[in-house]
Image (cartoon, rainbow, N blue to C red; front, side, top):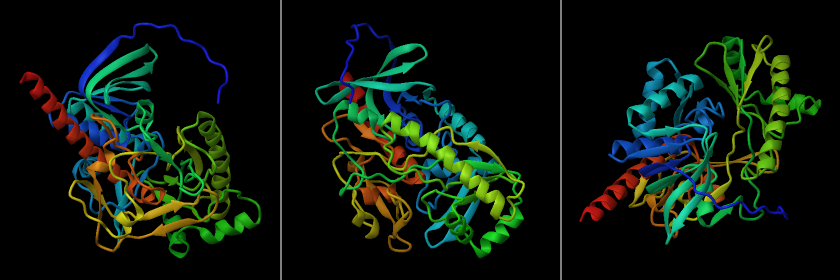
Length: 416
């Protein structure tokens, strides 16, 4: 906590946009929200702090999408567009469905085209700074860019910041971490290697799918210090290219700038260890080169905003259906240990889905503020299931549709 303060002089801030729907954050939920709002006739603005849409998909070079058998809509549309450009490779088709890997550069272009074709007004390199609230209603948001501060006014606002920054600034309540100690799921620095001999790696993976035997042996020798029990490796659409979701950065809070700074550096340190391990011990990686680390560390969990309904673990494991469903999924509770090795998994019934209620994204105490990202209202355990990106797009699509409908009703009541 800073003890010293500075009193900023009062000043007039220019209003740079006025819209029906304002979406803060261009990750999976924000994309779904902005597209749905614009396609339902709302003048829509989307604000993104990086230079591309997609959030962790692109800025985090995620590269892999977990199974999504019950997700359709905008997410399915995106996958089809990636397939058309040879930017998608489906993998697996187990009892909880199939997923895929995608080319992140192709994804950037596809997302640009989807946003512009829908008529959404985009702003890159713009950071949310503060919120203007009157009588339980968000009137506008203050943003920062190279041009200085500005205000965006709107009728409906959607918080897709991941960390729930807009909601918290507005005064909403939230939970952080697991109930017993506040510990958060670990962060991950994803990285990419090229010049891999795919056939040899895949043959090796048939006998040891997660490279666990070689990995644990290297850890026993002290070659690897990453607190994770296996290697998660994905073959990408581009020949000889693999993405690694293997680093595990514990004890960091993604809402704290110093923690994120430390996580970026610790992530790169771990990447060097993992890349060296792959080259030394995994057939097919002998001549591989490390070509990219993610521009932003992957954050699994931070704030969960208090809305009008809290999704619990039983919603997932009992596949509970709701009357106000806006999205559905079957990804399991998948808790990466906040303190070290180990991953806890609890599965819903095979062939069934759980549903996300609209109430779980309607921010408590506010008339026109929704969340459409991993900061929706759920417990630590349920969050580990619903946070998966296809479901986030579907949740965003529901939020954007609702926001456009509310904006239209506001306009109609004004005319009356």
